[in-house]
Image (cartoon, rainbow, N blue to C red; front, side, top):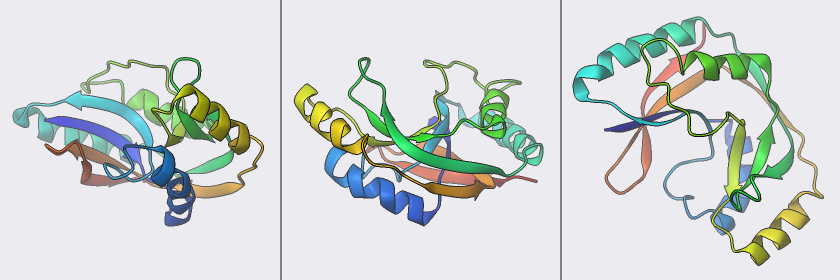
Amino acid sequence: MKYGVAIFPSKKMQDEANSYRKRYDPHYALIPPHITVKEPFVLEDKELEATISELREIAKSTEPFPLSVRKVSSFSPVTNTIYLKVEPVDELLKLNEKLHSGNLPNEQTYAFVPHITIAQKLSDDEFSDVFGSLKMQSFDMEETIDRFQLMYQLENGAWTVYETFTFK
């Protein structure tokens, strides 16, 4: 089965992201706004308990940390993806490192860029219009993160929470 690890921000931050996602993100219905801290990976059923145990240990060794969003950015020219840029604080970067060490699958397709996707798979013209207007806006959102979630993917492509891990 395919799993991933994500952080879900507060409802307020999710509502802000969803105000754009419902128009510009075809994955809007598949998963709520989130920060992917571990890309999707495949686990056999027999590996699940050991993985959960390791995730519990990681959560116990992680302090709550601030999550700040001040602006939008994009992955252009690689993809026409627009996102809320999450400030890369040390605790978040360390959490990502911990999730790619030990016995956990450690493949990473991309360098870790903390973000909340708000638009993707846009045409070049649509990307230019949307990104041009969004980058002139300022976003001033801040909160404290004290947990992450192990997610699994359903047959229809949607993601759902398997377990939540609270920091110490």
